[in-house]
Image (cartoon, rainbow, N blue to C red; front, side, top):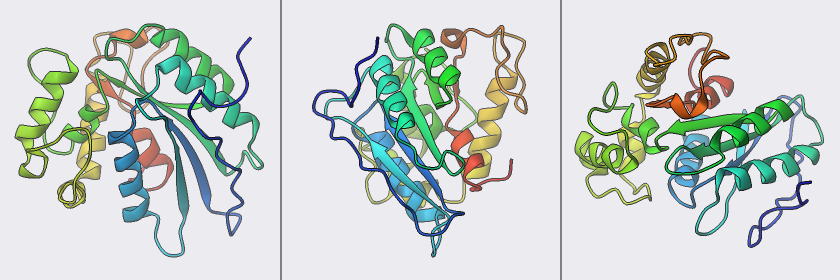
Length: 225
């Protein structure tokens, strides 16, 4: 039986009553304490508009969370929704060297939590804004090194997105989505397509390199579906 409430050290986010019935509200529970939070803040600031068509509330914990902790918090948040038709809960977590990744993914999806899973790490999504994929070892360190080399705005990247990063990312979203979908098409499982996503026979831990962050951008209308 899962425990109720957020992980120790994580404050419960109050339910949000948005102005206007058409505005989407996203609660994003994230594994990391910096990169995902910075990126989602940029996404809202850059694309939500005025008046806002969506809002993103990031749930995070200092020093980060494990995938099963991300999903437990997401499930608790799902129980609190006032209007599931326009409120969504997303779970952001990576492959890295974590255990229980597949179980966490299945637990989230079966309950209705949207999953933005990245293999090996979230930084792959940022890298796809500049290049088609990652060569060499499928490790977080390799992906982060290649991100630093891909654009001068990320030369000193160390988890936080500095002031130059948003300008470097802006305008490259459609290309990043296209590249992310191409990675799915080339998935080793051979049952996956960029349009339909990963097939039932594709094991989560084998989906590398890949990232599902693009699904949020499509859901929010940042890029066409």
